[in-house]
Image (cartoon, rainbow, N blue to C red; front, side, top):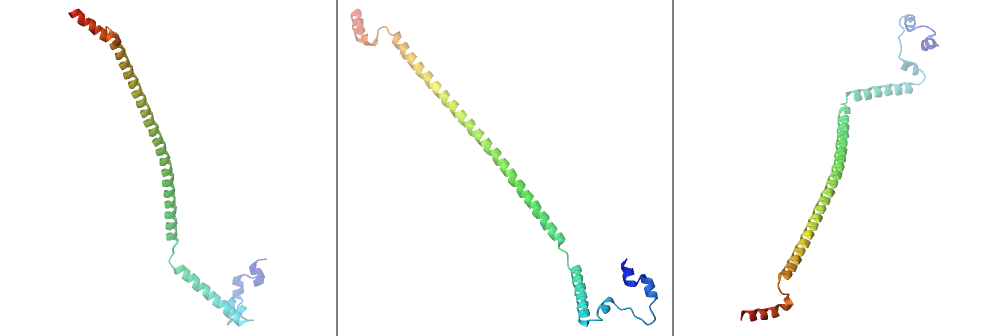
Length: 159
């Protein structure tokens, strides 16, 4: 059973209006409810007016949805940008740290190589000095311990 059948007795709206007698006035639904309680009807009327006033005020007030969306989108963009800067900083910090360690290792290797070269040169000089000393000692005619005797003999020969 439909709404119209239930409340109109099976007649549609046009048939119900055609059956109105002359002089009969249609009453609003609120008046039908007010038959038993005028305070109730007044309360419903006040509620209806306040709902209409509230909805009119809501429709006429300026909308802030665009501003909220803009603020939210800027916050989202700023958050992503800050996150990207943080990730880029972390990655570049790691790359810089790795490069710094490689440079320190290269410097240490260069210093160690320089120390080894200096030690080789020192050993080579010491060996040259030792060979020069041995060469000078071998090139003498007379050992150094016999030098005073050799001088005496040289003087005798000249006389």
